[in-house]
Amino acid sequence: VEMRKVLLLYNPNAGKRLAEDLCKRVVVPRFEAKGIKCHAVQTQRVGHARDIANTYDLSKYDCMVTLGGDGTFHEMVNGMMARADGMRIPVSLIPMGSGNAIAADLRQNMRRKGEEVSVWSEMDHTIHWAVDRIGNYVSAMDVVEVEVAGKKLVSVLAIYLGLFGDVDIIAEPLRWLGPARLDLTPIWMMMKGHGYKFKY
Image 1: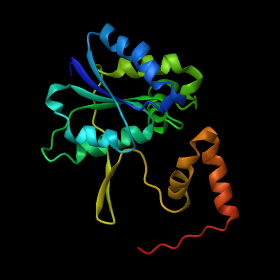
Image 2: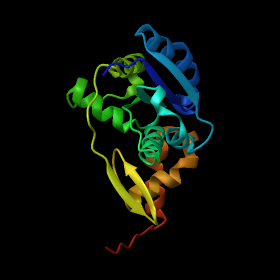
Image 3: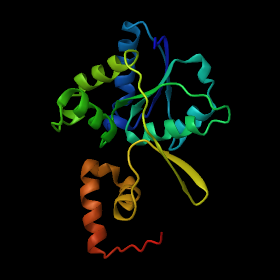
Image 4: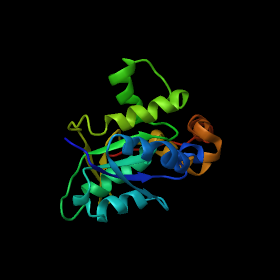
């Protein structure tokens, strides 16, 4: 698939708040060097990537890309999948989040052959790797649709119940701790005696 114009949704808080600078200084010029026009849109709030993907005229673009973490990508995919017009275009991501699980999985399978390597340890390579994939490769990706309390959500990575699900929610306002929040939150929750009962 030939990519001529990309809609890039970037989270300014991603990448230790370096996303905006990297977007303007590295990512957009890299797209332009490949002959791809890039329309960059900054997200303003939680859920904004979903709203953009749900309402923008996607017929003007060949691909929609996020510059942010797994959450920004999740919002974008859910917004597109919930469109009233059913419009779908290829999607991709440039990882700049705390965990970057989607990109880590792809990089391990495509480049690292299972070796665990943080995207932060080689950020320049990661950005170039991600941008270079856009326009060269398009493949189908499985998604899981779940309905919770009458709301449909699409998962592109994983679905968590119990402790794992709560850790993401409870740790969210603790972003100032960095990735350590995802280690400290479950310890704190277990010490407080959090328990779960499921009916199915």
